[in-house]
Amino acid sequence: MTNTTKPARQAKATADKPRRTRTPKASATSETGTTPAQSLLYQENLLRWYITTAIPYVNARPHIGFALEIILTDAIARWRRLLNNDVRFLTGADENSLKNVRAAEQEGVPTQQLVDRNAAHFQALREPLNLSFDDFIRTSIDPRHVAGVQKLWEACARNGDIYTRSYHGLYCVGCEQFYTEDELVNGLCPEHHTRPEVVEEENYFFRLSRYGEQLAKLIESDQLRIIPQTRKNEALAFIRGGLEDFSISRSQARAHGWGIPVPGDPSQVIYVWYDALGNYITALGYANDGPLYQRYWVNNPNRTHVIGKGILRFHTIYWPAMLLSADVPLPTTVYVHGYVTVEGEKISKTLGNVIDPVALVRQYGTDPVRYYLLREIPSSEDGDFALERFIRANNLDLADKLGNLLNRTLSMVGRYYGGVAPAPGPREPLDDTLIGVAERLPDRVTGAMANFAPHEALASIWELVDAANKYVEDTKPWALAKLRNTEEGHAAGERLNTVLYNLLEALRLISVYLTPFLPETAEKMNAQLGLAVAPDTAWEERIRWGGYPAGTIIKPGAVLFVKRELPTEEETIQAALATLS
Image 1: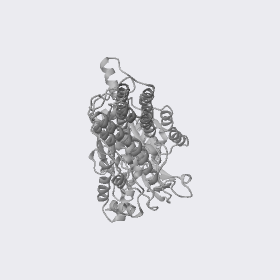
Image 2: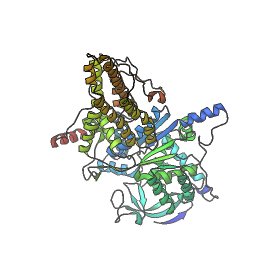
Image 3: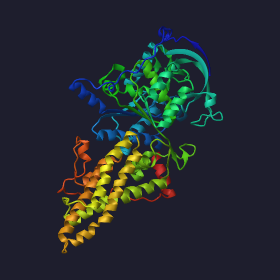
Image 4: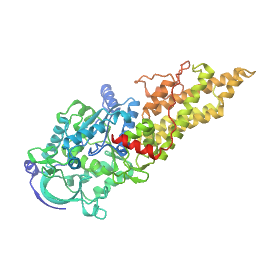
């Protein structure tokens, strides 16, 4: 890239001043306070969580790759709520990109019409994927966002970090990113495998080069925590390679008149990434220092972004540098997940393997889709979606193991006790084995979720499912029921009480732990178990063994999961046509 640097028109007054490198603002983790009231406020802050997805481009309908990200984020948000934390969960739509403009031109419709239509598809994922987001921000029309992004620009300009220069570079519209020659693979974008466009014009630049040393220290010390370690190493390697200033605007002509105007310079619009990254604070009311901004960003030690690995650089280097310049607290954690492939191939319109998550839910249900994406795809690695493997997970883990465990337990309680839960008697070694698995679960699930690993959490939960199924086979409650009318009747009856109570209690605990991951299933299980859980019930009470009330009347219902078969070619075609309609 070649360039000629000029003083910024809009930022000229500040660009020539001695520049100062800012340290991150102190957050709620800086001290615990000295009075009981301050201590209480500190503890309250520790239980506060703000979590976001990246906001996707809306040049097309959502596919299963974004479904993975938003379901993963939803599971983390629901987990934190289960722990009685104060959670705010944000998602939205990135609407001011050049690729959205070009998609609209290809369709022959106005850009606003295209983004309105496709943003609605993303927002409508709430119901089919059973999402619990608190806010959905749209960057092209939300006044909070426009005002907030312009405020962020002006703050960086005041710090002398914005200037203009002419340059010549290689730009991938798919990534909305400039590449150097050595970053290309055989002359092509490493992400989209397309040839970048040559762009030559005068734009505003951000002085990223100022912040390399400071960013490295923040990342190395985990003040800015990047998970997993491999992505942390990747960010540090990029910084150590030397940071170059980056363009943060484009001409109105190249933007086709689409985007947020640069403050004081209507001939330029703000670069889509500078614009889009701001959503994390503009949605909270950064523009006017609103109460949500104070509560969930400034006075909150848990500010978490969940992103895909392809946008690591923007979220762990560009975004924190912008915030340092603007004197705004940084995110505390950036969790980076991998990509979803389909039958071993990268998702591609050309290959025709784009999977609509809504169509998948229509055919197979919400929780089977959530389960597969959360359990079968390791959260920090790439994972594959294969329909045969998906159906096997539905049939084996969900229908056979979990669904059958609930069904057979409730059937025996209905048959042997008239649908009223018995009280347990003395414990035996087989009981201790089952209870031991249950009592180890809190630490295992909590540890997994602290590391943003729902696949590990679900694996631990299924250890209890497996242990309960084994317990049924080992204790043989049907045999105990037959012995009740023999000379050994009293002992057999007492033992049957304990066995069936323990199974009901194991199912209650399974439903508790499944709440963040398979919320609909957990709700159905509670209903059939005859339970109504108060939303403010303390976590410690929910997970304590023995919480199922003896004497509860069970309410058996429909099977939790229907076993499936691979669709025929005709069924696949009909499903695709239904999606298009």
